[in-house]
Length: 100
Image (cartoon, rainbow, N blue to C red):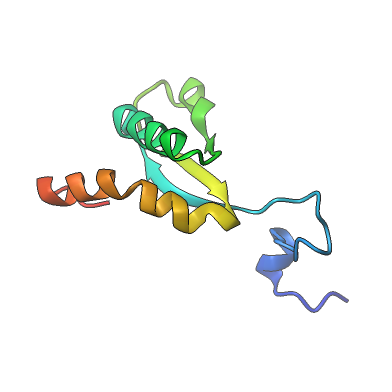
């Protein structure tokens, strides 16, 4: 029997040395706003940080009404850099009173 918690058994994020072919990712932004997502992607591109937009095509199912947020994801090792690169977005939202 595996000693991992049930959550880790369902969604393991192993030590990279154990399985170098598996890359774990972190969500750095969730949004239903396509403009916000586009700006965030451009900030990550400018910083040279590879990223993935998860749930991007769910709009075909939801009818483009904006209920399901898209997730902007980066590899674990880039999370701190990505959050730093997204600081202008978060700062602008804080000034506008919107928050993250």
